[in-house]
Image (cartoon, rainbow, N blue to C red; front, side, top):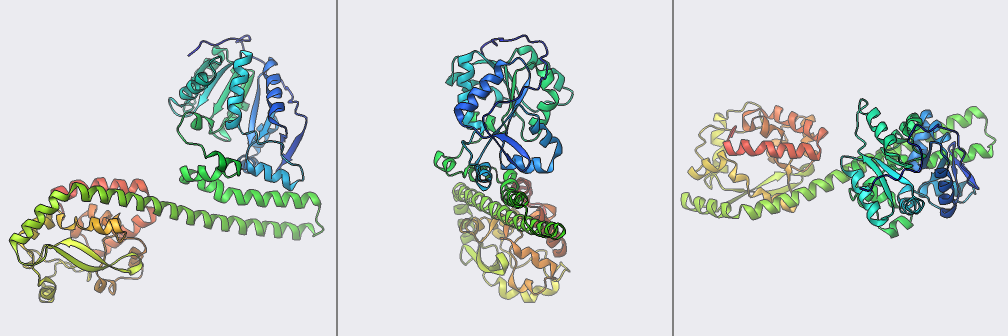
Length: 500
């Protein structure tokens, strides 16, 4: 990296109240921001950097305004910033509702290249603080590659501890940086700058949120056409559903409700205050409840889509890699006993929908007819599971392939076509369903699977009641990582034949 071009004394700069000088400001939900165009914004920022005093520039979008509405500390930080700029279609919508059109969307991600060009031309040095290890350095590399005249004074990740904070601040001050870009997420970055800007020795500090992720390549930006439609939030939601669903699916409707309420209050409606207060809070509660339900359903849909894609990839890979095993098992079955290689049986799938489950045949062809004669020998007392030690219906090859669960491998076909999943409750026989207790029927609320928590706990050695309890517990807490953990735990159990 280039050495810093020190345009000022690296001693502590005073945190003076340097007013921003935008020609026009607007206000939404109690937060005032500059409603100006790009050229004027760059001119104001250039003027701010030329003044030897430490000051901060923040951006506000829909999420920021929602947070500021509930968080007095964050709202106060925005109020005392030298300059606040508008970011996103939500702010534009709010300005339209107030009959005060937004001149330009000045989000930090789009503004960043213009700032780099301006700072390179004026000889201002910059420091990048935030993101995970190596992210800030990649942003610095991008900026210097695109704008060779830009002087980067230094960079540091944003995951430093409270004990390390003083050392990080000392490094920023010693670097002689004129401008500090901070990416720690809202509102942490704004609160951190408000508390520490007098110690930084910089002239301008910008809180830039997710900017580092985009310019480091960690997260792709939405296509230009989607950004022009004001729908970039949909791309963020697609790439980070678990982190962003509440922000957008709950936050956006809540923001709209607050804007409309603010507009009504400003217009001074004639309803009595007590009645207006009650009706406002009732609609607020209804809207929040509806948004929460919608967000929950979306999270379930997103989780199901991800699980299905994983099932397809794993089953295809498994079928391709295990083709030689399939051929050897098929040959062994044909040489050992008369009958077909495969055995199919109707099982209960999602919500008890019937499907044909595939297995390698491990029993003699008359096994189903002989089961009634063996009922008295059933070792399981739960009234559902059937197991007989040294079952005479099992063939010699069958004993081996059942011990190591090889007989279950054809169910990868069921996974591929969507009747089953890799992880889920084992599919039930229909004559077993009549003996389920009411709560145990919850097992049928998902696609059955090849492996499940009770396979890990002891396979057929545990009672059905315990199997059902473990399955229901899994359904209520399942996630991608819990599925991956179950798959990895299943492998050694299958290889050793434990609990078969």
